[in-house]
Image (cartoon, rainbow, N blue to C red; front, side, top):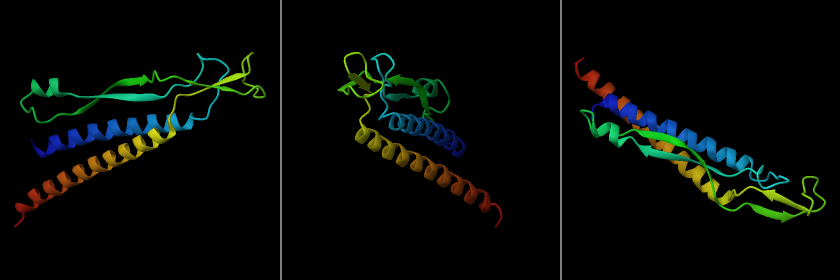
Length: 140
């Protein structure tokens, strides 16, 4: 794998982790929201990643596997239904609906995404330093 391919792979990882961080932030921001009906309640979202291996296998360089974001899906975990008759958002039976966001799980996912993002930055930096060193060999 050439050094320039490392930048492409690292950039795809950075983009994927950025999407993961934004999705997690959105889930955390909506964790305490309430709704008066089941259909309007926020549902946790998760990005779906795929390594573009099939694309890489058709190329000259099968080791340059990039990360591809296939989409963002909503969680099918059950929503929380809470009895709160004094809440202005309560339905006719006195219930409000809360998102299926697990704050602890989201925080762990955010830490993981942040570390993966940092790792991709370090990979790109290391490739840049190696490329610089290679260019400096000819100066001597």
